[in-house]
Image 1 (cartoon, rainbow, N blue to C red):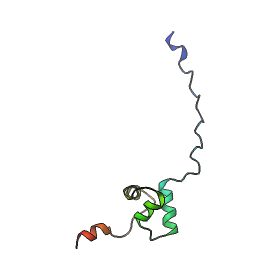
Image 2: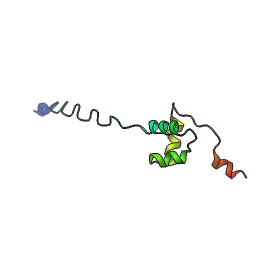
Image 3: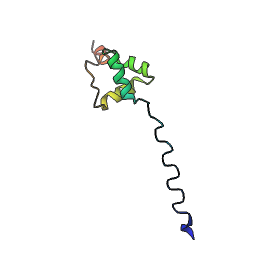
Image 4: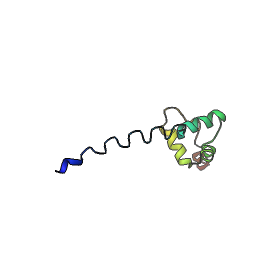
Length: 81
C-alpha cells in the first residue's frame, strides 16, 4: 500500500532549531545601539561598524518603524554645485 509511510517523519525535527539564534541582534537593533552610542553617526560609519554595505544600511533605515533618517543627503548636495 502506498500510504504506509505517510506521516512517519512528522514532528521528527520539532524543536531542533529552537533558540538557535537567541542572543543574536537584528541589523536594526545593531543600528539602534550604534545610534545610541553616537547620535551623529553616519550611514558609512554604521556600515563599517556592523560589517554591511551602506546600501543595506539605507534599506534598513528606509523600511524601519523604529529608525528615522534626519538631515539632507550630502551626496545630492555635492552634485548641485
